Length: 196
Image (cartoon, rainbow, N blue to C red):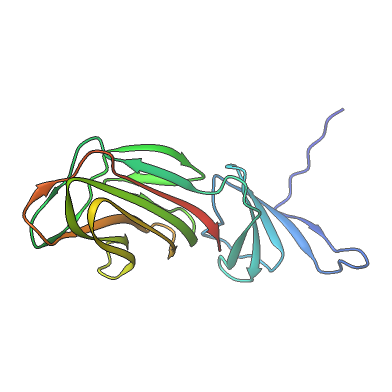
């Protein structure tokens, strides 16, 4: 006969070699808890396949993700070109999303990260004819960029590992040193969580 146990938490006091207390305290849809009070060693299961462990007690405390299962990843790309005004900074337009996993979302021209951590970001902006552009990775629309590529050519590429806080958006900006023109439509932006 099947039975179920209903408790706020199920605790283990530990055995020799692992004497510190640990409690399974429930589950979330995704991500670490944002409310409630927790102790060091508490852990929860994310229904997206993630596992979270409390490393600093508090309300809600500090949490780290265990393992790399269901890591947030995402890719967005353009279905049309972006008009780049001469002597101006413009955010590249991305109208289509693909391969959004682990809670990564797409909002306008940005990939929105669900988890605070380090993300590998890759982007390509293609132009024809060749143009002189300063291409940068932006986080949450801040003017400071994490990396840049300043060059003249048909393909402008930026790659870096950046730090982003949950809820922040990652986008790509281009400063056009020349006359106004429209980019090609083979532009893309991708990001993947690689560490916390």
